[in-house]
Image (cartoon, rainbow, N blue to C red; front, side, top):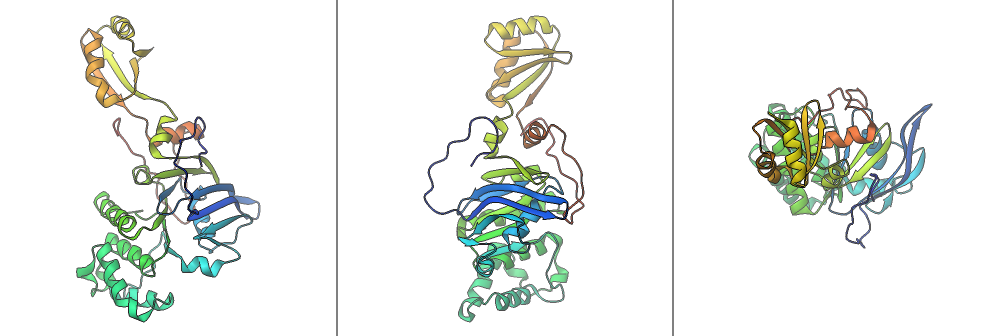
Length: 338
């Protein structure tokens, strides 16, 4: 499914039923409509991201898909089961990692997992092997006997992911999985997530307001004010808002403009200098500078980012807005280069 304007990205036909199927899903609280009739599918084994600012409707959608909130309208199926009519079966087939930590820090990591195994009815003859397996998946085997109170924030987050995987769910929901963590710890957690998908074949559905984090997904749905405003693969979303550019300032912009146009480049002139439109900014920089024919003062290469996508589809810069129980800023991926 593609909601972004322009030509949809062609995908190979998939005859397997989707892991998540949403049609016209709506959630209202009195006069406030938090989620406004959204529709999308998530393929089995896919990493799928909901990208949007705080208050956009991400967590509300997760709650409906995980049977923690009842939809006001529309329908959703997760792992083949209706989230309203078959809520109990949905819960058996999903794992959920909340934004807020829900571990008991006075128990050891292993004791937290054993308690979860009892709650989810993991067969007794599988408990030991599953605990060992999930500790291995999140690289915490050497800390399984330690109190959670001795864990760093990143280690606790990885333990929560392990707990969510203990009962072998078909879909793992991660609500802002790395919020508040430092970049190095976020990278470690994403190593764990990719290992989960690779070795367990699980479907990952995450919400995030971090641009760089969303890049890990195979498809991204940008959600704002409860509506999906664009949905596609990351590169396709970027391509939908424009081509790569190279910005130049030279000692003689008039001469440089003429030389570039004579060489077949598409160029625009502005007060800041020249903007050259290219297919691949990294590969084209050398050739563009060589074609100018006059000394170059500055050169800046730019490839469209998810920031550009958000701005294109919403008409404004990314905002900082509190909501859905979070108080973090909508993080931007800075820099001219990807």
